[in-house]
Image (cartoon, rainbow, N blue to C red):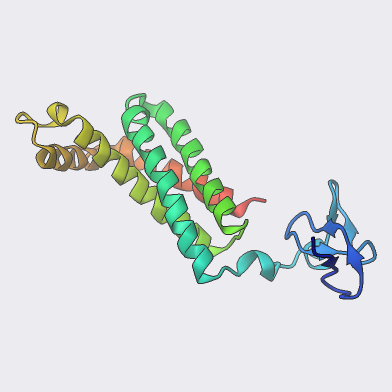
Amino acid sequence: MSVMRCKCRKQAETGLRCIRCEVPICPDCSRSAPVGFLCRGCADGRRSLHLYQIDARSLALGYLGTLAVALFGGWIMADYGMRIGFFGCFLAFFYGNVVGEAGLRITGRKRGLPMEIMVGVCIALGLVGGLSLVAMLHPHYFSEGGDVATATQSYLLSQLYRPLAYVVFGCALAGGISRIRTL
């Protein structure tokens, strides 16, 4: 196991990490927080560059993993969340939180605008993919002949005319982005 060195004083060995940005800090450089310790940058309220810099590989992996979670959740939302009416908004907010948390965990707790865009795109694709999956699994509900393509198209178009679908999407988006923005 490698020895951790303090972010500010490179010669100091440490076992502490900042609770917000997770960089190694020594006891001399740390600031006390209600739970744990903060580095000088986080204690002063500055943006920690460590949290907001994401490399292309992590972002690509984040898109793939978050999209997988969003598609599964979108299928559940389309199958059950749209049936329960207004209470589907609560389920949508929870769905957004789950997708946002998946994005955070996959990318190593990174934050910022690229992460918010990633989560928003994955939520939108997940909900549309979930609606399409429900129509593909049950084509006889949505078209008379049972044709999968016609059923998918008619079901997606029918959702465009439902105001509740937009409210559910907004709640899911609010849940996902709020999860990215809060520590």
